[in-house]
Length: 345
Image (cartoon, rainbow, N blue to C red; front, side, top):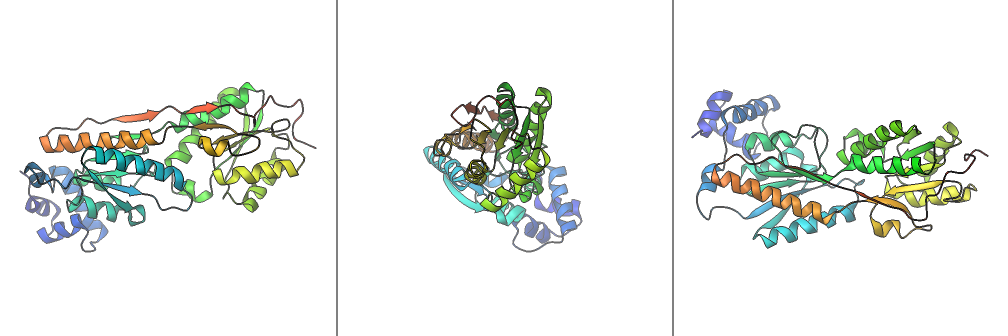
């Protein structure tokens, strides 16, 4: 069995340094930490393997790493978190909430100390710096979101590329040719949030296939930022007749601004939103929207992490699983066939 001493020898450091690096109890130089984590991977060291092999030594706790970004949809995140908690309890597990502002150090602290038997990561980025920590420590984990590199991972998410494609297909089927995609604020794309990037990719690819001309504009979701975004869209493409809105904060302002600018929805402009059903039905006109199951994501994530916990306890290789849940487009009153002329006045 590989020991902590073996890792220390491989990395060229002391055993105490390895212990501090894995537990996060003391700051360690980044280069030293990388050497230690690489040694862990090379040797296949599992810090808690011995403890897990002893009956009754599991903590029966799952750590759920939740986002604290101001740009995330809190009700959606809480719906998923509640589903995780309820499902875990049915399997005899409690849930420990860890905020992702701690980054890799928070994941390392929970995983290396054995505080939790497994980890569920939310708000996964395309190149997520928390994932190498989980791999290095051999921690049973499930991801809500898909990173670019999915090897050795179990992941679940809504199929955001399909969601973007549904929006493009719907507007193209209605005869719209000039469309705009109103996205999140620039910070969301800078941190490579998977849900934002994949939706845009799906929309962009399908728009190209369907012959749509489109603009993507970031938007902070306030009335002022939405007004600026709409003004830029119409200045660049005055004949825009179709709008896809992923930033939920921008939906209300956009409808109001179109109306005050003399553009009726859906007679002059069609609006498709990516949002939950209750929100879509709360606007006038009610919004054509793409949505997907939220609670099911939480339930599947728990099933995935429990399967990996069981595999670790049995000393077998866990099965990697990637699950994408199919989104649904519900047509309501905010979309209609494209007008014979564009929005240009």
